[in-house]
Image (tube, rainbow, N blue to C red; front, side):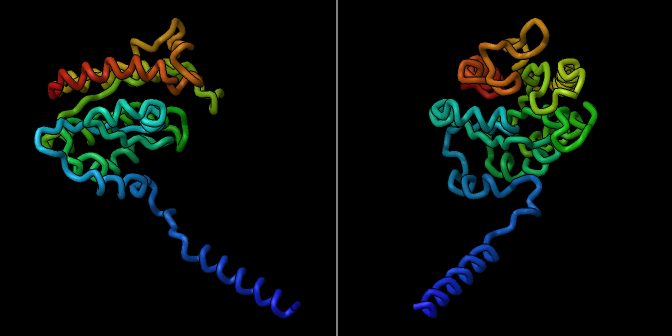
Length: 234
């Protein structure tokens, strides 16, 4: 009986070790291209007459689809948000998660995680350069560009030691607007309808001062649809 039990333990251990060794390692996938790779393949190219729009960003977009999936499923909208991502990661994903999907337009929301210091401290100029690169890639591939004024943030709950967050967001938004106007690109203003008196998010629209709740997303949907209609019709 002891021999049988020992053999069973040995076989179980070997199988477990084999499973661990054969598990795919994504440590080299810094931009998380693997996240939407299969989904992109299933979606395929737009159908005739489809006015596809890709939402490219981080957690603000990723959580949006979780809180209000019908907004995306009832429209030709593809959510390609990945929580925690910074602007260079969005730039790396741009070909796979935007260009190859052949949308009519792309909505780019970038910069907050760069400023929050999730991966290191960067300047507004660095963020804007990545946004410019994405916009240029889109234009080259006949994709209309919608650039977002970032949502108001007074402070990041996970990095309260960071000072001047609201001012940084405001300065970044001003730079994005200046660039968009110089290139005749649509500006999607998420800042104005959500901002409170201290330049943070109104309490009734947010879960933590950074991410919207369902009511906040409903407000965003109104201005988003207006920007899309202005850009490609609807």
